[in-house]
Amino acid sequence: MARVPYVSREDLPESQQPIYDRIASTRGTIPNVFKALMNSPEATEVVAAVGEYLRYKCPVDGAIRETAILATAREMNNQYEWSQHEPVARSVGVRDEVIDAIRSGKAPMGLPAKEGVFVQAAKEMVKSGVLTDRTFQAIEHLLGTRQTVDFVVLVGYYSMLSRCIHTLGVELDEGLEATLPL
Image 1: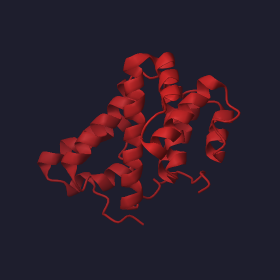
Image 2: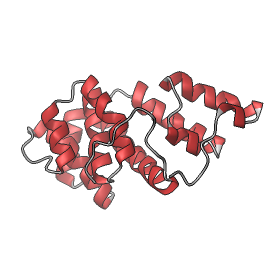
Image 3: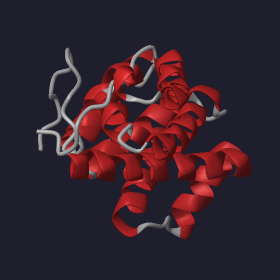
Image 4: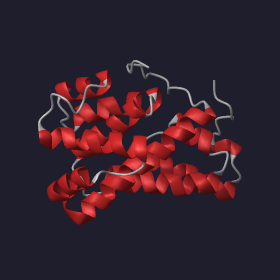
């Protein structure tokens, strides 16, 4: 059960409704996480802008992005993020074997190195807050410096969002199914 009210556009003063409208225009809807965060519209605006960059403008390949998001959701035991991103991951070409390995907690074991390293990196960042030199070098070798920084920001963003979701008790959006074993 949500610990804060879900804020609708009509709940906001007219001066803050453009924040709501921008989120709706980039995502097609206002997910519950942003409805909860909208209790602080200015903070939501900044959080949504970072998410917009990472999801829609960042040069990191969509399959790598979604693999990292799912791995972060798994490590954070975040049903909400998992349920939001599992269909997105499939739509951008993340293989079922990768999704299943992440869901089960076995990944990166059994995955090819080029896929497993992204899972390993997300796990390391969530667990210890840093990447080992070996993992960092592998990511940088595959992505280059700029996209390595984007990858680090991506995992950091979804870790932060996960903490907000858990703390605020954000519920799954209508139509989504809980598919992550917790």
